Length: 127
Image 1: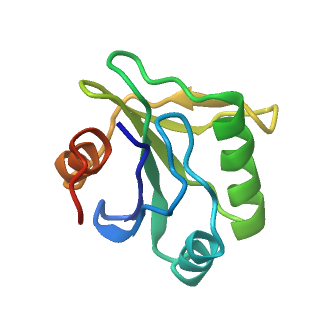
Image 2: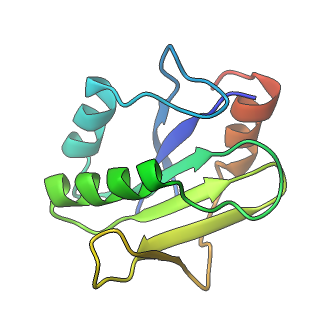
């Protein structure tokens, strides 16, 4: 398993895959190309999904939470943040008032990219 990520537009479609060198089973490096893609598509960007190892309830790490907050501050928009495991997917959104308070949302929303993200993370596929 290696972490993988995907930028998702407001309609649930794929904007870009994030599969940089150096990703591991517990981390995925930030890159200039990821930030550039987020910035260029900020008007239609709905959020970002990434994988976590294992199965079960995917909760954000402290690093996830600080990344969510920093990206939103830089872009000036609130986003959805999906985290997947082998068998679950949850969508997080800022709930405040603390800048790092993100909570699970009632609805996951459209996820046409979920199978491909799992393939890239758990089976080593390519987009």
